[in-house]
Image 1: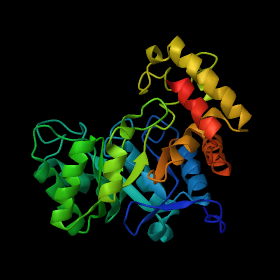
Image 2: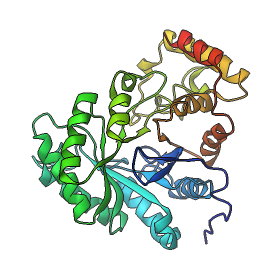
Image 3: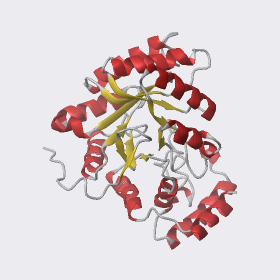
Length: 328
């Protein structure tokens, strides 16, 4: 039977999420990949144990995570029931709705009908009374923003979520969403954008909006689906995301230009005494506006590697300058 480590809070750093009362670990565990029915249950159960033993209190899901869609929530719910029933108050559990989840006109995007139905489904799959954070997973161009934010407000007021969040919203829309939610009396807690050394759109206005509105930021895909690691320096491994038919990274994305950048970044990481993946995560945490970074893991060893990041998260000016030279 699983018994959490009594020293689990000693090593992890926690940052306040925007101007809220909530603190998140600087590393959170994302269940986007590796926790579906196509994966090995005993393996991802051990990953979740290791995460909690290391002070990772925040577990990030969405309705469609798997594959198949819904299976990550179902599997996480089984682990919660068997191993974490006495620790619910020590956990931050997030889920989202926005992408295609079930057939017909009510199975995706941002309507009140879809969002609230999806949340009910997520709670049933995870066998929970509430989630801590419920996100609109992507903006809906055809639904009024007031309706989508109104659904998030209702989710919080109904007690099915403690906080509201948004993901993949551009800066201007984020400011509008924040104002609507604030006027409704349910401030937007957090934004989850895609952010890495290779994907920096958040630096062109979004981070400023988050700072002004008092929202936290949790970055997903910090390793650009594994590109920012030593995994692809020697080609495409058989078990990598680029090799999987259902993986989000396509082998065509691994261009000679990308490989040149990865190689140069890897040299700098080695000089810092880190792996490339560790340096890429630490680089995101250099900015205090980033509350947390979502890391994935296909093994306990991979999670342990990410956790080693915490030993060196500071950069000197020469290192930051060199990274900019490599990336531009």
